[in-house]
Amino acid sequence: MPDRDLGGLGENKVEGWAIQKGIVPNRVHYDKKGWDIFLEFPQAKIANGISYPLDIRPPEISCLVQVKSTDKRIGKINRIKLTNWERMAKSPLPCFFTVIEYDGKEDPQRAYIVHMGKYWIGKTLERLRELEAQPSKLLHRCSMQLTYFDTDMIDTPNGASLENAIRKYVGDDPQEYFMKKCEWINNVGYDEYRSKFHFTLPKMSYASAMETLVDFGIGVTKEINLDSLSVEEVRFGLPRSLHPDIEPVNPKITVGEVPPAGKAYVVVTGEEGSILFQDSFTYYSPGNLFPFIPFEYWKLRFSSEIMSFILSMKDNRADMNLNLFQSDNQIHISKLSKAANFIRHSAVPENVPFKMEITINNSTLDLDIHSTDFPPINAQMNRILSTIETAEFVFNNFDQFDDIEVIPTELMSQTIALMMMKGYLNKERFGHISSIVDIDNEEDIDLTSLAFVNCVYAAFGKKVFVLSGYILGQGKINAEDEGFRVTIENGMGRCIKKRLMSKNTFKKFSMDNFADESFKVLDEQGVQSVIIIKGQPRPTALGISS
Figure 1: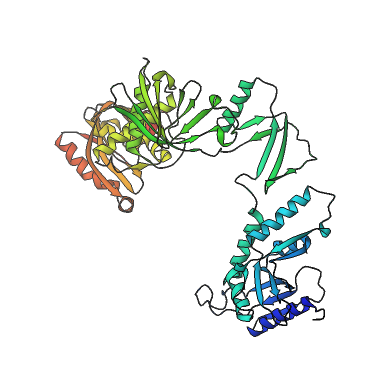
Figure 2 (figure 1 turned 90 degrees about the vertical axis):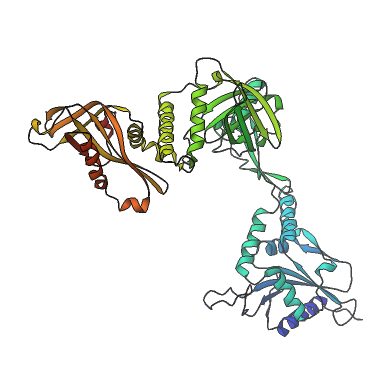
């Protein structure tokens, strides 16, 4: 058989197959960019099994095809220019190689569709990355082999098989395909970590260097000052220096949040084995960032909503820290109450021993810790603990202790209301309460038999705790510019009525609803003068600094 133009035969054949199925084949007239035919498919009436309205239906499929024809059945095409591979790999359009085997005959015997998908994109970009490290090699003189297999063969060399093969790879929505191809281009060849850092620390002892790296690796410190720093991007296992010509000035490594290593469960028990505290912790290991650090230098940082601690693997010593309200997540009040009780228990002058059991991935570590391992309770922590204990008392009196979750800022902002409620419910004495009253003269009030009445409320989630109460005692009066200020010192608190409401019900509720009940109760007790405080009491009215 005389020499044939196999390339032209193959392109004509693919063109004919396309026309059979109503696909528009656009032949290239100046073949320099690596593709032979631009195929435009007819608009699908149904995409992804859905009949879309005209204005939102997916666009029609378009793709680039390079045709290769051969009389040999060897499963490969040699010496395809690397520049052609690059264009097809990086084009947002679907790209295909169509290989037609003639076996020396006039008609195609077999045809193959090789998709420029994740595998071939990866092979192309890897070859380009290798070439980057060989500047003596010129891109336009490099080539790469195409291989194809029986799995790439279409059922029959005709238009229907061509269309089915292309639609199988592209799907019904070219926009979705475009996004997927962009993901392949951007991510193929990278491991979990894309970059590799090379640095040297300032001159220090080996032990100090390890401690510096460990503290940074578990998030105790947020930056490390360096002597030198270089960064490499690693793709396909091949490093490439980033900004090799730039010498950093005062280099340092900084981190916002280090990645956690996993979850741990911690139980603290007393001398008699009673559980004082238990919680789930997130723990941080230096091995995530610096796997080369010898284990004897390791520390592990454990953190929960309640507390955090650092465990030194060298001496199995735990350095405890209290984290109450470091985040504004919802916390169950019962959990806070147990934590507050444990913190009070640990803040004793004696050196009280505890047992700590840490479980990670079914492995358990037992530690001996002591009250001296905990920081002392400062004024701020004491206020937080007192508010938690007050909330516990109030919620128990409303039979809601087991159901309430609180947000820390929400809880602390209602400290005064909770204190008032506890005082009324517990029949406590109030050291000081006062209010400006609108009277003509001092004789209008019987200071020997006086009560302040008010209604207080506290809202948590969708629930509102409402309570009316009074403070009974002997009063005194002083004239001020705003009017007469009436004060009760060391008055006795009493609850008149408590009620649990939804927020929607509370919006329609009037504090005056409790007024009649209050007057009736106080009248029965022979109280002569009653002052109603409307709204929530201010801290200054209770003798508390703002």
